[in-house]
Amino acid sequence: MSHSEYPVKRISQLVSENYVHAYVLYYFGIRFDEYSEFTLEQACRDKGLNVDQVARELESPTHLRESELPLISYPIDLILEYLKHSHFLFIKYKLPYIARLVQDFKASHQDYQTIERDLKIVFPLFVEDFIHHIYEEEDTLFNYIRALDRASKGSYIPTRLYQLMERFSVQKFAVEHEVHDDEMKGIRRITNNYSVDANAPLRVKVIYHELKDFESSLITHARIENEILFPKAMMLETKVKQIFIERIRYN
Image (cartoon, rainbow, N blue to C red):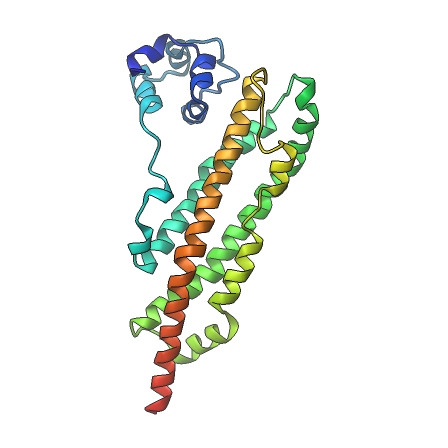
């Protein structure tokens, strides 16, 4: 569809055609449930927005996903920066958007009333646990790997590095990481694996799409950590241990 067709379409129609449109509109200040019967042009006029700019954003392709990047070839410091940036996007943009959808969730359909209640209880707890896990990972695992990377390049204080290596282990981090690899199991159970029928309210379809898409992002993110970050970090840790052994031998 050409973006020239967007201005005359109703917001509910645009969202029904592509649920991602709800996310784009949200960050322009257009809540699809509040403006569902407005055309895009009318909604933009009400918000004081340039309709052509909004239409271009709606038409633009999906941002490059992690699975499409050649991360295996990246040096470990860039992998860490990329993962940290992904954490930032999750916490700053994606989770607040989904949390708002869940908070404002009004099922208006007997098949989804229990799901509405359960999601409003469980999702905030999931977000709290997820954010805690993210910050803990950055403060421990990421910082430890950065210290190993600096040490492999000759920049380290022997006593400080020795204390870190006595306290931490990449293999232990990897084992503990597997515990968090299925963080959305409870939400999948509540939503019956995000399954909706054709007659489900549009809000339900949008929420389920966003939850499923977020879980897909987490799966890809975890795979990058498990299959790329941890193997590289283990090799790095082995290299630094060898540096220590060589230093002791010649002292």
